[in-house]
Every structure is written in C-alpha cells, then in structure tokens.
Length: 162
Image (tube, rainbow, N blue to C red; front, side, top):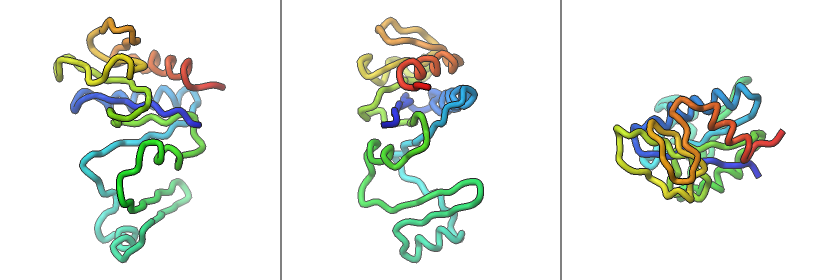
C-alpha cells in the first residue's frame, strides 16, 4: 500500500507553498510522488468548447485525454470518492501527499502561520509534524516553514524505504 500523508491547515496559511517545497525536495531525492488536492467547492478542468468537454456534454461518463507526455481521466461520480478510493486508483509512486482532507484518517502535517489563526486545526495525536513560524511543545516534531528538507527527512524515516 502506498503511504498517504495529508498536508492540512486553514486557508491562506501557505499549504500550497509548503506542498511545492516538499515536492521539490522529494523529487530531488529521487522519489516518485502523487498529489491529491481536495476541493470542497467542486471544480471543472475541462474548458467549454474543447473536445473533451464536448464528449462529456454529449454523455460520456468517463473521458480520457492522452498525449506522448501525459494523460488525464475525468470520471463522473454519484458521490464524492473517499480518500482511500482515490488512493487505490494511483500506482507507480512511492508516496501520495494530499492537500486538504483535514477530517480524513491519514497522518497529517499541519501548516500553521501565527498571523492567520490562533490555534492548531488538528489534535496532536493526528499529527506527524507541524510546519510553522512558531514552535509548539506538544510532543509533535515542529519544523520551520522553510524546512522542507527536515520534513522530507521525517517522511523518509517514517514511510519511504529504498
């Protein structure tokens, strides 16, 4: 089973920026990684008028687009898939990192910025680490917001094996 780690935090604390830093560090070390972004508002990646959009509008339940460099699959669902159901569809990577899923059952790294909110979103027992501009004494490793190497060291120790 591919390990799944969730990067969580409230809006505007820098989750996406932290994700980018962690991804660059993981890739620099030679690991293969998949990401899953949770969007509670819904999304649309097909542009109206494009061929794949037209296929879906005509009734296709699943639309795949493929090129020599990448492919994407868009499937209609009756209800939101669970994180485990999504992770089961991913292969060929060493680790999956999500952005979001703060209520999910996966180990979490919380991104916390003191100027944005006053307390952590998660309970300490849900966390494997905190990335923050302040330190916490909760028995959970705390890393600076620029310490992606330290966070990836932790991920390697806990989840990644050569």
